[in-house]
Amino acid sequence: MKIKKPVFFIVFILIIAYAASTIFGFKMQYGDLTTVYIKGLDDIRLGIDIQGGVDVTFAPEDEETDATKAQLEAIQEVMKSRLVMLGINDYEVYMDEGNDKVIVRFPWQSGEKDFDPENAVAELGDTAQLQFRKGYQYSTTTEDDGTVNVTPSGTVIIEGTDVTEAYVVPETDEKGNMTSYYCVSLKLSDEAKTTFANATQAAVNKDSAYLDTTATSSARYVISIWMDNECISCPTVNEAISGGVASITGNMDYDEAKALADKINGGALPFNLKTETFKTISPSMGTGALQAMILSGVIALFLISIYMIVLYRLPGMVASIALIGQVAGTLAVISGWFGFHDSNTLTIPGIAGIILAIGMGVDCNIITAERIKEELHLGKTLESALKSAYQRSFSSILDGNMTVIIVAIILMGAFGVSDSFFAQCFSFLFRWFGISTEGTIYSFGFTLLTGVFFNFIMGVLASRLMLTSLSKFKGLQNRKLYGGAEK
Image (cartoon, rainbow, N blue to C red):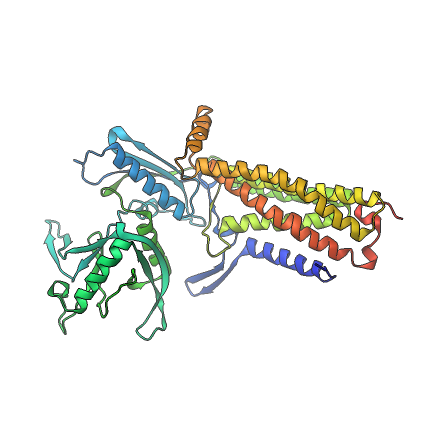
């Protein structure tokens, strides 16, 4: 591929623009409503060790419930699944089998100053028992204090366990135009697909079991959708649905629809839970330490860039630009810059992973720069030396980075949501040394893996494009600029 002069400026501008968008993000303010188009550093969820968080104890709502070990383990897995879906890696979930309790610790939401622990744990401990029922029928009872309890009475058609996937889509009206609301689209299992198709056909045929008994103007044949004992949608069935896809509507905004989809995807708990105790956790390191680490990182990156420029001249300058792109790429993945991926938790070990990945990036560029010097000292032309240097250095770079990738994947597998043999072995080893293995080590592996991935993009591809492009300028063809001696 022929690399032309403007390529350097194109790649340079893209890296700087990408880094700026990663740092600042892009938001629009309409009155009290803030719409986030691109997430920045402010959207990163910081770990418990940096900004503190919540310690909550869940217990069975019915005090007479004698939970089994299997039930408590099921609650643990549901909690972990929901935390992961919320982009929280720095968490601790463990059970107190003797007292039928599950204890969860997780960090505060990023940017939330007036932190309300009750709101934070509400979604996590929600039973989210989804049921599709025939018609819209229910009974009510009133307690002594005036509380009205609603109990649905229609026959259950399918439940949340019959849903294979739930995701958010924009809601449309009868004409197919998008409204300002969102709905939750559900994909059903093969067995539920047939059951649901038969139920919708029965509703179309005006089976009395599907009649909305509360309708006053005209008879409606519906399938009501209940979350626990709350009816969240009651759509009229106009045609049989045989494709295995259903929708939950109800004038929901995006956040409400996503929260509902997350609850359904997270699975149902074996029994209702109540929040027995909750408290806030003070950070072990604090935001002051975080600011000091950020300042140290910026200074270190600046000094590394100066060192590489002095030692390797033009390749060192290009390497410095590539390092900025590598750091920006890693932070973008953590913040949720890519729309398909929510933000991840950044912990102190996670920052260590970023720093280690930067070291791998520096090593990658040093290998290439030294190879360029060697090729020039052999008497090759500048163009030939650059081409040969990048080709011959790639195998060394690949070998070094692949070993780090393997280690990072093992750490993520061992300390993420995994029950594999290797996970248990590593978990036992770390706990034997007194190291927490719930989510902090996973955070280290995640940032390390992400940094190494962007090292290949920036340190190998982008660096080659920029340096080869610069070598096309007559004023930059002096071999001394690349570490060689003038012919």
